[in-house]
Image 1 (spheres, helix red, strand yellow):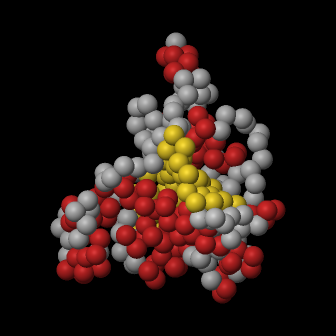
Image 2 (cartoon, one colour):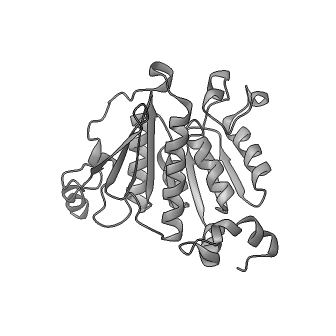
Amino acid sequence: MDLDDDQLLRYSRQIMLPQVDAAGQVRLLESSALIIGLGGLGSPAAMYLAAAGVGRLVLVDHDDVDLTNLQRQIIHTTPAIGHAKVESARERIAALNPEVTVEIVDRMLEGAALEAQVRDADVVLDCTDNFEARFAINAACVAAGRPLVSGAAVRWEGQVSVFNRGPGSPCYRCLYREEGGVAETCSENGILAPVVGIIGAVQAVEAIKLLVDAGDPLDGRLLLLDALHMEWREVRLRRDPGCPVCGIRRQVSEVR
């Protein structure tokens, strides 16, 4: 496809980047991102991907907008209270960039439905807040061979990484092995609003890098943010041969 005059103008500052240019912008317009969770992380991630011109966004969330969400979930507005988060997000994205095709899923994605949505996406962003969902999303990404951009935040802390980018890449379960764990939540521990904004924005950056094949994605690297002291740490990750999802032993047993 060729960019028209309005597209050249809308995305001009992005096209100026040699790592993107016009060809990269076309790739974005032809790409699809699956965003699971439209809360504190999914809000900025969805808005930045829409603004950047990712052509198709699939938004997944089964919750309604609540007054307590508005402190940090910036895609939602006060008039949206009581409405489905996916509907609220779709309206905001349409106002921001009407060129983007937005599909919504107003229910929990599980099993075959989750696997189908993951297969249909070029990149998956996990913006959820519990291990059960994260493990399921990771397993679906491994099965489909889709890269996963994972973020989490609570209190003043956040973390973000890219998993399952290709052969030899670690998956989320290489980092967190225990099933049945309880993730710390913002409702129980609190959260500073800009912290989820920072992590969600980084997720959007990583997704764009993957889609246009630019730079060095956070594959095999976990970034940890301590916003109270404004410090970043990087932890190197390796694929675990004994991982129950992507490990060598599992692959051998499946072949047999």
